[in-house]
Length: 289
Image 1 (cartoon, rainbow, N blue to C red):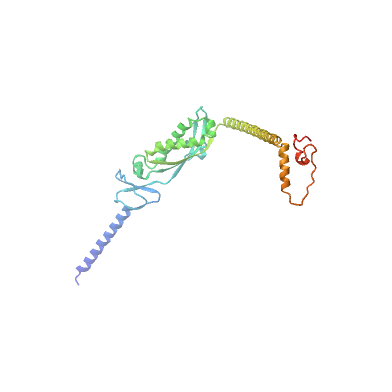
Image 2: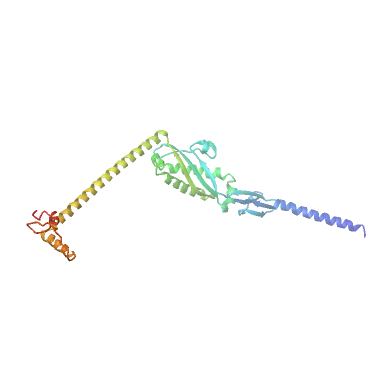
């Protein structure tokens, strides 16, 4: 065996090791995993690939970068109290009603990023789409919708309609930007103490009036029922008096005798003037007794 053969074998082994190392290096920079609930956005030297990658294992060129955009349902809370808001004092909601009163709202918006537009959002807005798009749109929708209602309506039956209108306006405003609004929860409406007390007193007075009206209607219906009942009894008694003639009572007496068995004798006192049983004719004013 010549000395060149070991050198050739060592060189081949070195080449193999280099190839393996190169492949490992390429795989290290090329293979990525897009997490669950994320959209993978690939960009190369400032150029964004418009086709986002779904969750799972993906391959890219080593010099390309991968950004992951959250496409899960997210929430953004605004409150009339700064300590409850999502981003501090900037998210404390104070707005004007139809009559110019200042009210505070506690509101939570559920939204998510449109997967198909995630690459465009990353290119035009970046990862902070919540602060750039969602938050200003929520504040604008709240201001526009609340200005259509009075404080009393916001505090009572109008609250549900306000939430629906905010959701509609907000959805239209952000949909073209790649944001999908899922729900708007209007948790509370805070009015000035004086206004809230006045509204509560008014509602209590209206409730008391309704209760009194109900009692009056109930009494009227009961009186009407009693009148109708008395009228029915009077008419029934009048009908009986008109139909119980002496001839009809005598007919009933004869019919009752037919139903008696042979051999039975019934002794009944009779009226001398009519010959009818006294107990049958006792209720008639026409019997002459």
